[in-house]
Image (cartoon, rainbow, N blue to C red; front, side, top):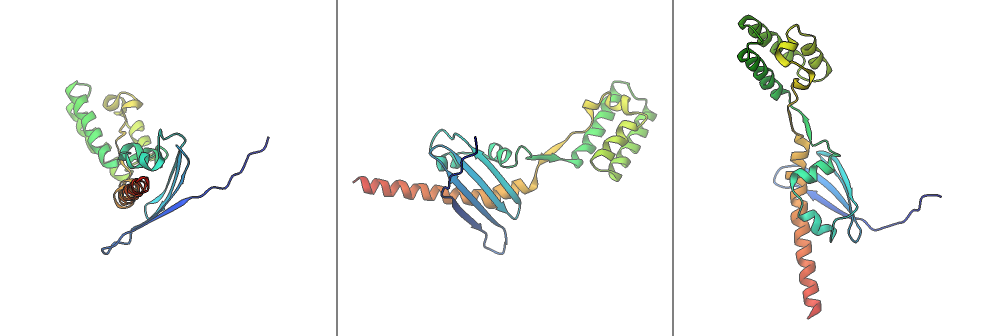
Length: 190
């Protein structure tokens, strides 16, 4: 059995900044009775998701979403990215904890501190970063296991900026549209 193809109407919302900024975004909505497909292209990248059941009017649904939920969906679960600055803190904490537990001698702690942090400066993230830590003579004394390797993450700056500069004004516009639509329906009912 072949796939069926239907044609439907989409709504394009163009978000353009003023005041000296050149940020832009195009958000396309394809709304069903209780479903919505969101496709966004912007200065900050492309974001998309399909909600198959909103539990109500799709635009109302979108207006009620928070940052974490929305951006996890629109980034396909990739809202959080590696945070190499956080790795430094994690390495230091592991060395300090290993010293407190007397797993490391004072000399070993100094060596691990110097060499592991120098390695992190040279390879701030990725496979070479982890390989250098795992291959270090003091790996087991500092981390104990692979599960304790640095894993700090932070929100993707492109997603944060998209939310602030594009999504928030879009939602404000959507709320105004819904309010006007409700007002018009109220007038028609009279």
